[in-house]
Length: 77
Image 1 (cartoon, rainbow, N blue to C red):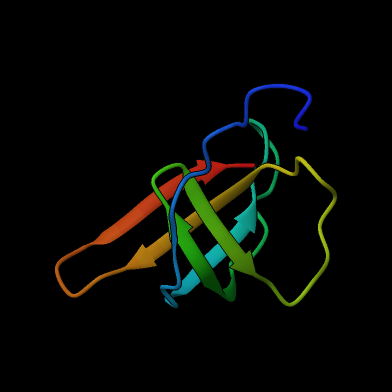
Image 2: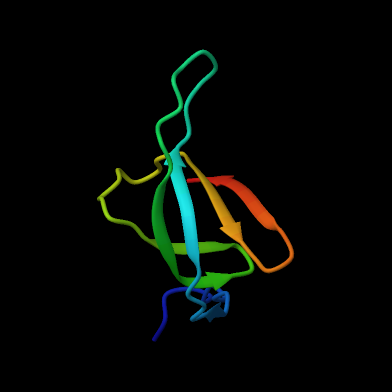
């Protein structure tokens, strides 16, 4: 028997898009060069990214996703 109410899960869509990403830096800090990665899936609340390196949980990132119409720039962790 479940111990409490189940948390609703957000539907994730298996959308693979190339992204440019870099660690987010503070004011006055040198911005690192952007690297390439891709999305594994996308939901209403976020992206799951496949990156060429392992990041610490909670790392701040800047992400750019190019679409045929525009480039979408995001910040997150």
